[in-house]
Amino acid sequence: MGCAIVVSEPSVLQDLASMLRAGDGADVTFVVGGRSFPAHRCVLAARSAVFRAELFGPMKEKAATRVKVDNMEPSIFEAPLCFVYTDTLPDGDGGVATDDDKDRNVPMQHLLVAADRYGLDRLRLMCEVGMCHSIDADTVATTLALAEQHRCMQLKNACLGFIASRGMLGAVVQTSGFCHLVESCPLVLLEILDKLASLGM
Image (cartoon, rainbow, N blue to C red; front, side, top):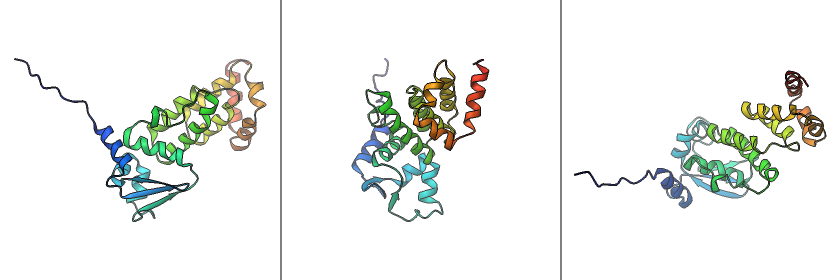
């Protein structure tokens, strides 16, 4: 006779998500823009070398039970925190899903910065993929500057390819993002020219 025992699906991610939501056993609280996020040092340290150094290393937060996070919105911090526990984002998209790609792009840029700040490489790549799908003439220069500053090569190449595509350069140059790109990453202009030259434009 065959064995009729059915083994349930793994539930570790759901269990960790429940622990995060309930705050059970939390031993550190992050304060972001006036909001508090209880968390668990061991989970954070296991998933991020940055959190490990901050919470267990010689850095100042080692003995702290409250850690203030500057230069980040609470809604942006919440997404990488959820990712640490579940390997996914809230609502499958970090709470940044909208009907309009342009509206989605700015929070995704902030999320990429947060992922890079905490050394969450998979999350950073997920942000790159999402931003590659939302490139347009209005946002490509800002996205290219961000990709250059955070070493996102796939996103950078997608932006360069978009700018070099027929008829795009003129529209991109007219955007405020292009002025920001020129000021913050002037050497990228040479790469744009190289890309145009390689395409015979």
